[in-house]
Image (cartoon, rainbow, N blue to C red; front, top):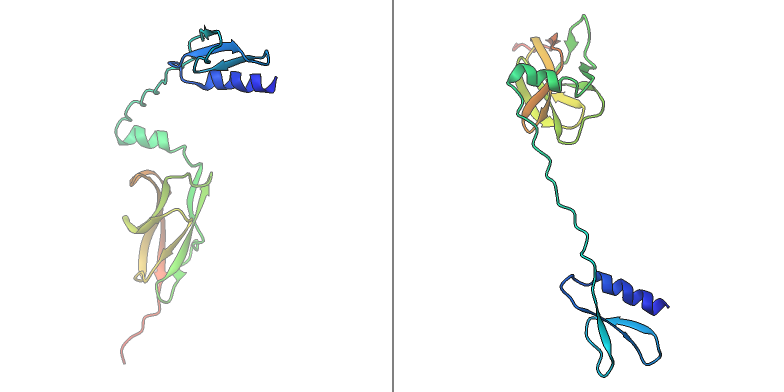
Length: 174
């Protein structure tokens, strides 16, 4: 019985163009083969057509209108996008001008998205997928900071801008 079942599975696994033969072997068992047996009467088996499903390619989404509507549609991507770990209502003391800025983001950063720090309106450093951004040797004085979420090098969302004064030790020459 197992041999017959295995043969039936083999029959259905063969390509649709193959011819299948049914016959009775010397032991009286029904057998199937893709070649007619020698010296034994065999009948051809007509198989039903194979099931097939056409692949349907989903239609591409319509192009987004320019900037304002595009920003509205992507604004809901992250419910929380903000800078953190910065002092509020006081200056940031960084003697060498280097410090780390945290990013609060919810939900988690999606695959393919990167974070870009913006300092004084200009991208700063390399985009990253880590919510800790390093600032190195920034000059003292008033600066603005924000963070953008990038997708394919295009900004899809930006945090509110935080203004802050960076204090550095000024080492004068004697």
